[in-house]
Length: 166
Image 1: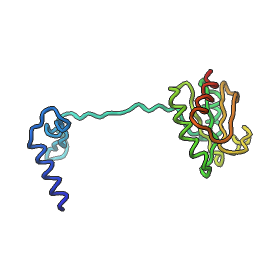
Image 2 (image 1 turned 180 degrees about the horizontal axis):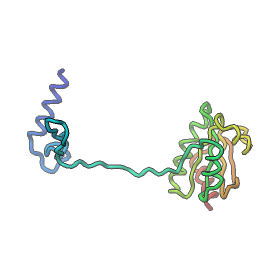
Image 3 (image 1 turned 180 degrees about the vertical axis):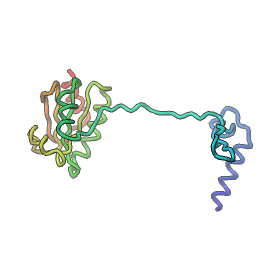
Image 4 (image 1 turned 135 degrees about the horizontal axis):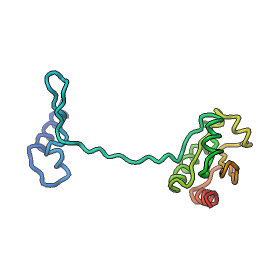
């Protein structure tokens, strides 16, 4: 109850004061007021326009759903693909995965990353001879051109990707 009272007093003091070009100006000018509704709740008279800022999401990483999805998005890809074979129970995979995603994102679309859970897709793991996790394959034009098993630091991962991109 006391917190509500303090908050109400604070907001009242902000909206009653007329700050000049400060960070609080949108609050004082009423830019964040709620829309006014008519008694029938059918029409809305909006207050001042609100700004919404968004960021562009780059989809350089994706999860493989099944065999045909792997064929379409990895083997038939014109872009070089890094394939991360991992497992939910694997500790090193939990460290390598985000590190690899970060390094792939730095490449700005020159390479993409496919994530394959070996427990869900044992057929793919057997086909690509994955005997331990994490295993990372570098694929270009449907062919495996490089591979490593285990955890790597960011410098080693960047060198791995540069070799793949060429």
